[in-house]
Structures are given as structure tokens and as C-alpha cells.
Image (cartoon, rainbow, N blue to C red; front, side, top):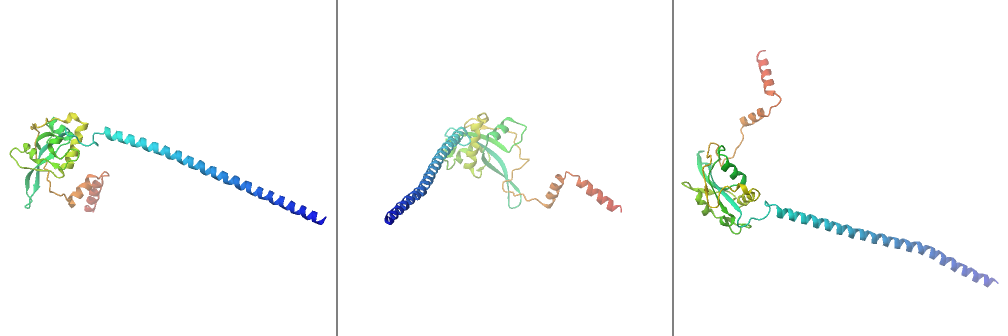
Length: 244
């Protein structure tokens, strides 16, 4: 009888052990499955967000490329693009602090050419202007030029000797692009010589002069921005002191 009870106790213990193990394993497996599902959902959301970001980026790139192609100021120059050059009368200061005339070949922007060619009341330092196709004035292709064919600018000389301006390639590229937006400013024919401007050197362009403000200049500037009437007030105070 005692052995029978012992067997029952062993069986009961085994049943309880299996039940508790199952009770422990089941929640653990459920939690593991839930974690896997959550990770899968997170990966799916990340993939969706990544695809959406890629689509938005692609759309922005396409918009930027379209804007680039539509903006004439950004696209490279072509062979037949319009380029205008002018002969400007400038000055340089010599070692004796005297001014010498110094003529310069300069590229003209659309605004400059249109202004000096259409307004005789406006004074300008330009004496003559001519125009070229881009392929005829640049050295190398206009999209990637390496220099300016200065010899072709001698048509502007007349009875003077001129020099090419500083940074001619960069300045010419920038100036030529302005005519892409204002075609109506191409007021000089290719190879023609445009003259008859209101030429004046009263306001001299001194190329090698560096302006350094003096004490008097600073005083003048201080007075020019005096919006509170301090000058009159100070003069009154000085007058009062003198009368004491």
C-alpha cells in the first residue's frame, strides 16, 4: 500500500512539473512571437518610409534638374550665344601720384549695353562696343573656355592702346549669360562697331587706387547720419559756455 502511494506521489509530481513548465513556456513563446511580429512591423514601416523618402528625393532631384535646364543663367554657354565687349577709358595712378589714361577691354552685361545704348543723357566711360558669337571670342569651347582671343578686340582700339580686363574669362561668362534672359538687349550687331555714347571721364575710374578714409571723412559720415539734431544741440551748448 505504501509503495502504491509512493507511485501516486511520483505521478502527481510529474504532472505538476509538466503543467508548470507548460505554463512558463507558453507565455515566453507568446512574448517571443510578439517581439518578432513587432520587429517585422518595424522593418516593414522602415522599408515603407525609406521608399517614400527615395520617391520624394527623386521628385526633388527631377524638379531641380528641370529648374536648372529652364534657367538660362545656369546652363553652359553655346557656340552662338551673344557676347558684347566695350572699350572703357580708365585711369591708373603712377609713381608720381599722377593719373594716366588706361584703356581696358571689358565684357558688357545686358543691362549695361542696353542703358548706354538707349540713353544719351547717361554719361559713360565706354567709347565703343562690339559683339561676337561666343565661339568666335573664347579660346576653347564656350562651355569650358580657357581664355579670350584678345586680338579680335583690337577692332575697338581706334587710336588708343588697350588691355584686357582682370579675370576676363569669368567676367565674360557671367556677362554673356545675362543676354539669355534679355535678348532685346543685344543692341549691337555681330562684328559691328557701336559708337556715339555720351562719353565722359569726369567721374574717373581709377583702377589701382585704394581708398582709405581719413578722420575728416569719418566726421562727415557721422554728421551725415545724425538724425537726432545733435549737431545743433552741441553748437548751442558751446555758445552757452562761451557766453558764461
